[in-house]
Image 1: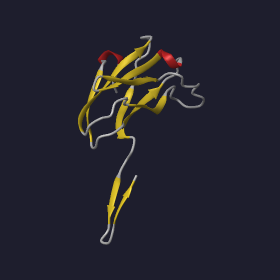
Image 2: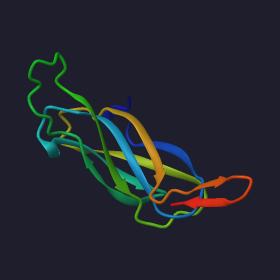
Image 3: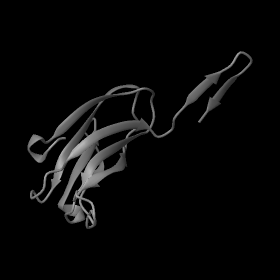
Image 4: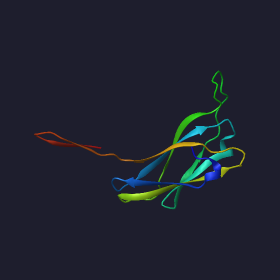
Length: 124
């Protein structure tokens, strides 16, 4: 997991087709105020949004005060097929580390071409 001292974090990725893409952040949602911790997301240097990672409720009977959650931001620009860079920059009050588990990069419109002997179908 990336921690505040290793910011900014950069991840190389590849768009399989041109179009609009979402960036999904898997992170530890923590028991701090919502705006106390988060990451600013950009794709190829263009800001896509900020993901607040605080705001977890009381843990109840769980032995863990935080838990995995997933949020998304959408790249604001149309992306060409090929390589891209996702950058996460820490935002927050500095009292808590952001803990990122994974980054998923996915087209907002997906295609699947199914072929049979007699016909070709395209699902969107």
